[in-house]
Length: 116
Image 1: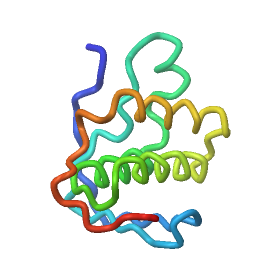
Image 2: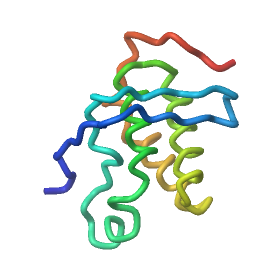
Image 3: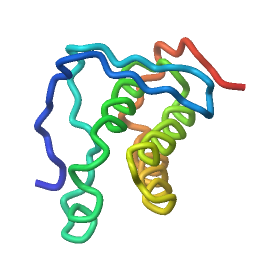
Image 4: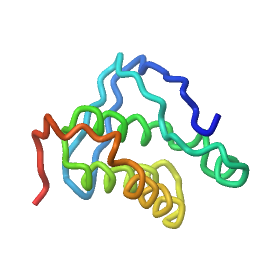
């Protein structure tokens, strides 16, 4: 299997304060997430897989709800993975991957917040 399909449910609210957007984002308890869907390719998965769970839950929530435009959701992922300890290079790789492959998963029907 190339991607992990198992989902977990958040047992408590998850908060992320973004310095970039000067805003706190809430991911509610009960939200189901598969965190960061890193391909199970030998080098990539051993390096980036099963890390950045809070960031992945935030990104899943933003994509599924359309709370922010897709480009902002991807920037928030980049900021969040760095807050979880990723290097600038690792954060760039995560951001680049969602920019290239994430559009099919984004729900744009309920956008309520835009950063201009």
